[in-house]
Length: 267
Image 1 (tube, rainbow, N blue to C red):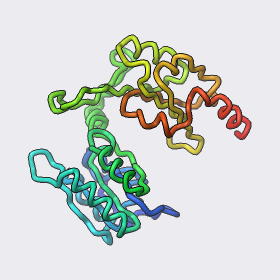
Image 2 (cartoon, one colour):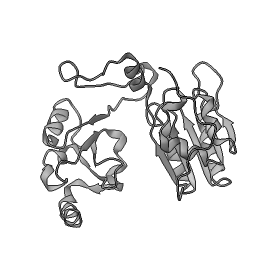
Image 3 (cartoon, rainbow, N blue to C red):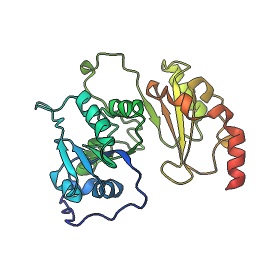
């Protein structure tokens, strides 16, 4: 793929960019595959902690920022994750806009949870800006979709099982599942998922009308999409132990019918 050279001028600024830490996905490698939002936040960064795997030409967008290389390249010396966490927390008290620039997508095998935990423990505001994960970029280069209607309806992103010292509580994310909530729940329960496995349901992701709910897999069995969601809006169903804390922070799905009625009237 021929790359488009990054602009040498600063990207357009985002109005009202809040102070805090931004975990930004740099994409799979090529500088022009970072998101527009990611590049704009970089242009306003005061300090950037970046991985060894990024295209260094991205740093041209933040020429006035302090740059800190934190490694994270397989087989080479890199900063420990604990030290990176501490650097982010310390920097947030000294700089308005702190960027952690991570290869691929921050949330896919990027150890973002440890950074999130450190920021939340220190009560530091943060935002996550998604990036293109390598699996999807590789598929684009091959010109071969990893999912097809005829052959494959399931896509697995994983690492070698031997590298995980703990039990692997698998995460499942269902696209286009708004009309099959009960079927999703029944299928996963049959496969051995616990009845109290956490579930997050997100409608109209990233749009102004975005809404999020949480429930258990057992509760999902009784969900009627028509009582909770607007007509024809896409819903993603996210299932797994990693969402346990969201049961306390998101609106309960089983209590969302009244919320839906109010929202429908407002819209």
